[in-house]
Length: 108
Length: 107
Image (cartoon, each protein chain N blue to C red):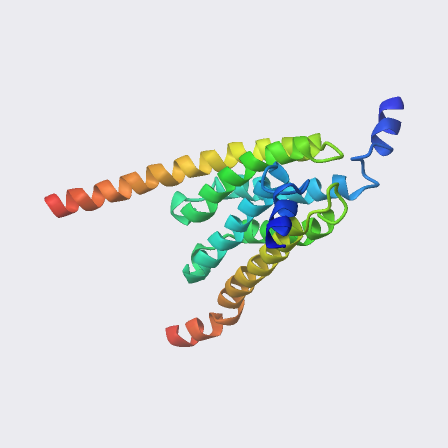
């Protein structure tokens, strides 16, 4: 039974013999790279890049349910992109706009 | 007028998500272009390397998906170019800083 499930996966139109599998699978790298960059200081994060990553994640989650073949792998990876992008943005915004008071107080 | 009509009613035209997906996707190469004016120390080696492989794969994806999406293809060609450029800036800056450390250590 497991063998036939594996066969179904292997032969799926969006399966590992196709670009429909590998392109979205590799896209996880963007979220993984972003998670690795969670430890980067917020000064080194890029607003344009993280806004782009978050927005594309959101729009593409929709896109992946409308293309042929429907691609849930692509859907989940874009949800992850949106999540990590929004988190990085919140780190940078928090640093730039909400910890300034500490810096100002320290300088006084 | 005809070409506008064709565009408007295209299976990857502005009435479909196949159009707006790539429109938003342009934000990635445009962000990278903005970042290319900034000092290379701000470049993330992780993210840029991943982006290079990612756009290479998605150029193929855009060609094979149905409906075939040339808009998406062009977007990823552009991203591949700018990400490779950023990667070269990052590598060169890294090479310089490593060399400086060696010189300082050796001297």
